[in-house]
Length: 418
Image (cartoon, rainbow, N blue to C red; front, side):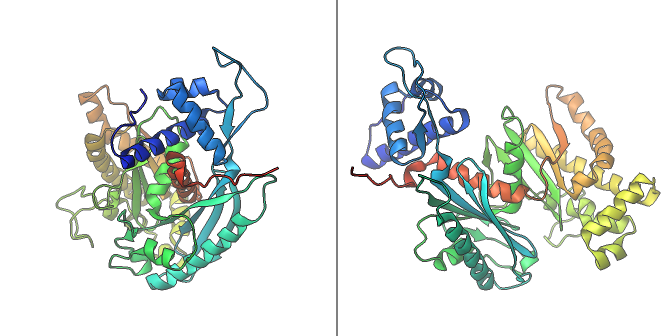
């Protein structure tokens, strides 16, 4: 159904932006395709599609194939396809030690990357913003380099992914980030933007767990509507994706499963609640229960996790008991998550992927009763498909989706006079 163009001028502009994005997303996902195919798939009138395609061509976001094919009635038309090199995005992931920056095109292909140490954990938000702005400038310079023949590329989005809930309030406020010593809200997006005068595109900040969830969603069959990621790194994090969009809730803290209570008579948590999931399935809890606290302190979480896997493979009773307790806690959390969200898939990432073979049997046992009550429920609990780049790839996907949904911010190509 074509969207009506009545109402105020601002309404009409919003409708046009929506329809422009509708057409571009279809071409990006299904192109090359004829205008008639776009009209059928989107429900827009053929005349509207023709106008919108012309607009996208003027912006350099799509191009016409040389080969013509029949579009049904009338003369044959040239299929249109995405021109991914026209719009470039920058994604930066903040880890405990590094800034990992990439430049990607509109198809999500990475065309430049750089990893640099930041020495800001813990540190002040201002110092981190300085480091981030410098990383973005280096990426911007790379993006503006003439990489593609006959293409005038423009930078259209910057996305920063970091640990901690983020409120989408215009200033992109990180509510708390204990890993960096930030115990009060930090207007990180605004701090970065202030340090980048002349940057002609928006700066977004997203939670890195949400970014990883988005990347996992796009790595799986599109028939699935909902996915929840639970991952273990320094603690327990994750994200929720519903109908292809990150769900952050009213205050930016949705998708933080580490502080879901799974035992009301459990030990106290730093968040103020009792019996939170992180106290049972978090790396520190599991590795300590398995007798690997000394390795954890002296060599770090990954080395201790590797030792845990060796112990599990050897049938060590203490290691098996620690992972079974974590699995029971995860199963309890999943019962609550599925009852509330009814998602298709739960993805276990980070160290939980490494432990998955030993977690899965107990989790399945905990969930089996729910399956008997609701036999139509089809829930898959699976290990993460992506590795260490999942958060960075998710930030790229976030930027890409923002541009595909509203391409009106991409300037039209200059008119060339012959």
